[in-house]
Amino acid sequence: MKYSLTFPKTLKKAPSGAQSLNHQLLTKAGFIHQEMAGVYTYLPLGWKVLDKISDIVREEMNSIGGQELVMPALHPGEPWKKTGRFNSFDVLFKLKGAAGADLVLGPTHEEIIYPLLSEYIQSYKDLPLYLYQIQMKFRNEPRAKAGILRGREFLMKDLYSFHTSDDDRDAYYQKVREAYFKIFKRLELPVVKTKASGGTFSDLSEEFQTITPSGEDIVLVCKDCGSATNREITEDKKCLDCGGSLKEEKAIEVGNIFPLKRAYAEVFDLSFTDKDGQKKIVSAGCYGLGISRTMGAMVEVFHDDKGIIWPESVAPFQVHLVGLDGLGEKEYKLFLAEGIEPLFDDRLNLSAGEKFADADLIGIPYRVVVSKKTQDKLEVKKRSEKQTQFVSLQSLLEMLKS
Image 1 (cartoon, one colour):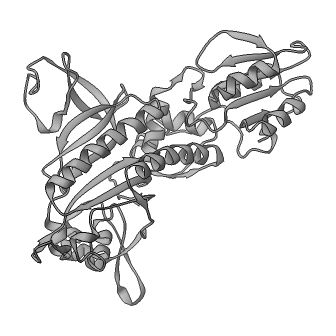
Image 2 (image 1 turned 90 degrees about the vertical axis):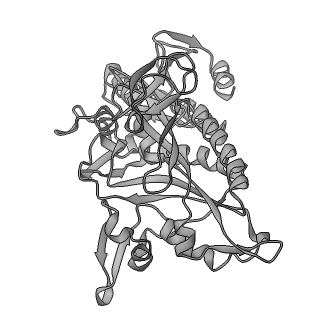
């Protein structure tokens, strides 16, 4: 992509009211635009990052048997009334449809997927079943803040698993847990598995928390064994796993997994006939991962005083090609031919310093400079490092492909 054609360009200053770091940097670098508190437009650069995070999540969900679907964001009110959550879910967006029908903007999808499956699940032969989606969710947060970390509209992956027994569910639960660790490892985002309350959905849950000073959650991390617990559910002064001392840390929750209570299955009669012809209630699990929240968390973790530092796995482009002296077109075309994703700053009448500042702000992993000064070499700098090196085009291609 040529930067002269990219929409939008960088901003000199963050908008007034942008207090969180992810809001400031993502807006200045041209990844997001705030429409109102908790609601953002994801601009082309931002959508590319979300798309890459989604693809990694999708690959790992597919690897454990997940089947992708998309359920509606606009829900009928009746199933929510049936579960009692039409009035008890405190951040529910409620609408009126044709003829005064009650409608809901989906904050979660139990009220859709349970009645859906009750039409299809009949026998034990229909189970187990693993269904997931990546979709916008809506929650009327009274305190939408912290940029894209706490939004009223946000992109999320939710997986639901359905089983003939709790034992089978628990075995799959372990697979999902391992898949989550693989996802965050591929994203290069450090996480701590944290014990937490399940709230509305379950008696207990496990959160995947990223430790960072900008986090809103407080987790207690054992100094000895590394296990963690959300402070909201414990008064313990010592680690329950090893007896070690606990340290308070601020963190951002990026994922949450839990076994579901049976209430939803009972309300919607999600049952099956077992091998002996007996009717039984389906056992289920729910596994959420915040795609847009993960993007915000990555910015909070991966940055310096100049801008964002994207991990290579999710960067919008592999190379930020900076053309000086009217050069760079040849290298740009060669990168495209070699299957390498370049963002080519082809703008004229801008100083090298201005282009370098934009490259640092946007945060693409490699900055490659082409100028008369570099002659037959290219000036290469990793965004995460200070030093530059001069390499041949062929050496650079080999480095990027490796």
